Length: 248
Image (cartoon, rainbow, N blue to C red):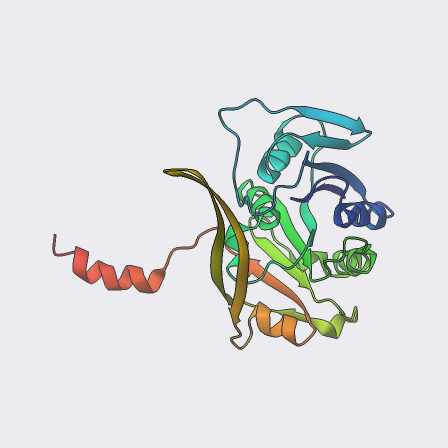
């Protein structure tokens, strides 16, 4: 299998290197990642600016752009052979609930799904800068080798690993997205009248742990797999509005 691997942490991050090291034993891996960290960039795509793409070694490229740019170039830039799987991660920090709307990790996988590729995002609760992410990569390889048929094209599969996870198959849960609550604050530095620097910091994260959600699985130490659709229409709201709008 030809696997395109990207992330939003940069090509030197431990997460992407772990995936290459472990998956490269059984599959062909092709790395393309942002020149520098691009966390929380969601599905940002460069459409007016030129992108500098640099080959740093065989099948390793860096892009002066966003994670989605990396996927787009990896799929359509004629630098890699035909790709079978778009893999984003392993992210340093989880992407649960509403995180998926902001995450560059999930955004990169979503772009692969939009182009009808099998697409998976991987994130871990381990945030120690020296952590290897090898255990997560090894567990994912086991999932890929034994359960490949569960993944379909055009769907984003968002997988999150708790800090101290058990790699046995019965410790994997199929989940829905939970709800994240953000309490954002800004550090403000006034330069002169009317102009200030605003720096987002001191944010607190809350969560609503509903039964069957990714938050519940994470809290209980399970690895969660959450399928995310590309079609987020709210059908309940559609039905409500249909009876109102139809009078016009």
